[in-house]
Amino acid sequence: MHPHLVSPQYRIHLIAATLVGTLVWWTFPQDISSWRSASIVTGWIGCGLLLSSLFLMIREPWLAAWLGGLEPMYLWHHRFGVGAYLALLVHPLALAADEWGESATLAWSAISPWQEDWPVWLGWASLLCMMAGLVVSMLPRVPYAAWRKLHHLLTISVVFGGAHLVVLGLDWPLIWAPLLAISLLLWRILRADYGWAAKPYAVSHTQRLGPDMVEVSLLPLAKPVIGQPGQFVLVAFFRGPHFQGCGEYHPYTISAIHSNGALSLGIKALGDCTRHLQLIESGVSARVQGPFGTFLESLPAGPCLWVAGGIGITPFLAVLRSGPLAQRVHLLYLHRNESDAAYSDELSALAKHQPLLHLVMVDCANCLPDLQALLPVANELLKPECYLCGPNGLVNAAVAVLRERGVGLERIHFERFDFR
Image (cartoon, rainbow, N blue to C red; front, side):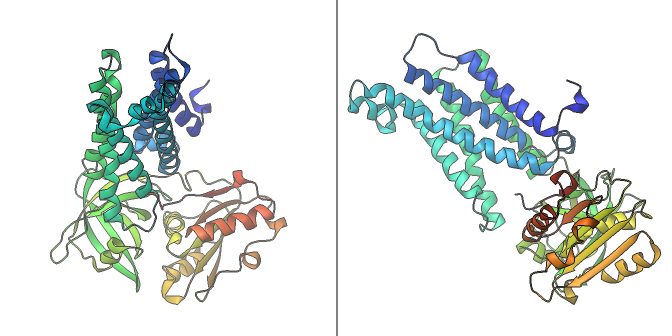
């Protein structure tokens, strides 16, 4: 198959199939009972899925571009993680089922850690840490700082799991499996979480956009990040003359790209860190990872519909700031109230000088927008490509209305930024 014809999702599945298939093929049991065989196979399936999940949590721009962006990578990272947990849970249960034919006592002893030795203890410790880590990762209301610390339960789970394999007496050709798992963990922790892959910047300018919105301009202190309109970067802000940042990497959409390599970011107060950043000042040091994302990557030559909600206007603004439009664009900008309408004056000025831009700004008065009335009717949606950016509720509602009006999913583009 030609490499350019291979879809990013196919690549993700191929990686998982290769890792799982290699482990199962190498360790496939022979001449033992069916339940014991099932235990061995499910154990290695779980290991392969876990390696796939760890591979997909690497935050490297080149890898994200090859696999279709961070959003599908994080989606399949979670799915493979859940699949690994379920397969590894079957592993000891199948061992117990194998002993059940002899007696219930033997079956219980096969999965009871206090009746076994270190390999079983380590295996159960890995499984319990994985269970706890998965539960934490699926709780959206956990504060980010607490979530990040608790998420390290999954790291501990991988370490215990690798030790479980080694203590069992892993054949030397398979030692690559725990070594690869540890290497992927270290790659993610050092390059992404601790910022070894990030580039140094400093805040050069800030502009207040509203009570809870600010635009921050970052000047590169070394080789700059080369981004495109519609992409986002992961940024950690540290200290300045009178400001102490939170030091956590969060995604921010690029609102402008400057000729000197500087970036502008629109930041809305949506959590503890972004609320603190409303007080940011010039001179604050920052580190930037990226860029990431494929939203607005290749705008068509034909007409477009852009729907933005609140701070979701930033990727569209970056396109408008980069130069005259090459296609007709209908931009529907929804905001809760006047103070929430970031960049409204600049957008109005851009619309006056860009004849291909039809701008509609709607003050929703803190109510849900009537998308049935605001979105174009069906016969006006026969050709436009539709791009949506904003809160998940707005994006989901807009997709539903567009689908009702005959717009195919292949013409609806959006990117979620709510991953952790």
